[in-house]
Image (cartoon, rainbow, N blue to C red; front, side):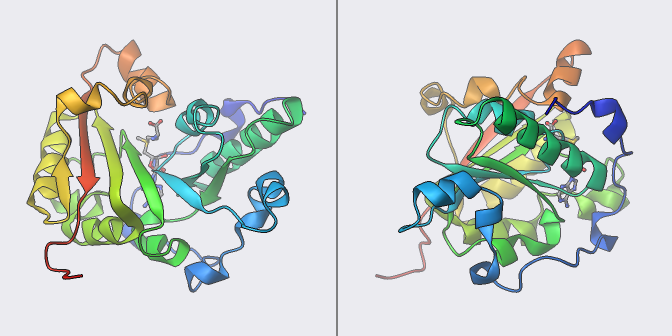
Length: 240
Ligand SMILES: C[S@@+](CC[C@H](N)C(=O)[O-])C[C@H]1O[C@@H](n2cnc3c(N)ncnc32)[C@H](O)[C@@H]1O
């Protein structure tokens, strides 16, 4: 099986994620059958099925998943992508990579879904260890800011599906969007920004700039890249 050619899967950027409906999402995370996405991993661990720990939200053409797969062979990762043809491309790309290297890329998969609407349908409370927002759509006009994938109500969902200590990575080439994301995460009581000093120890950081197709495009255009990373902290209102 040869690698798919991106030119056959092009689709214009999705305009209105609020109007996008998806009909095959699970009613609850318990009803989600992950085994068909990671068949080899489920066969290996039949007695204690693995759980998805990393979510790349708006994964585009899947470059981050493919880069992180060998770095975290024991973690299951899912790319969530709203555009049908783009998600088809990622699925075909992973299938081809698995055929070429049967012992590799078994821990990554892609779902065509609207992550703005159905995230808690897929993941249990505290299930995820890492969430990625790489070069999210900027929705420049003020009237369209409600379509941004980082907003106050969605942050509550991200905090819900992340474990305590879980990490959110954001990168954008749009300064205004960077400031918007920093402001929203910093204002939220369940997130705290990770210092640049601490980030130097994280091997993922250097992969965030150019492993994705959008990151490569920004590099070709000599654009800026703004990084901000946040930790899901303990809920100060929960008394144990
Ligand atoms: C600018 S692209 C960046 C793609 C990729 N992260 C990269 O760095 O190459 C933003 C992606 O987010 C996807 N997207 C936008 N809204 C989404 C949503 N609500 N759920 C899932 N994917 C979404 C878009 O279709 C697009 O592929």
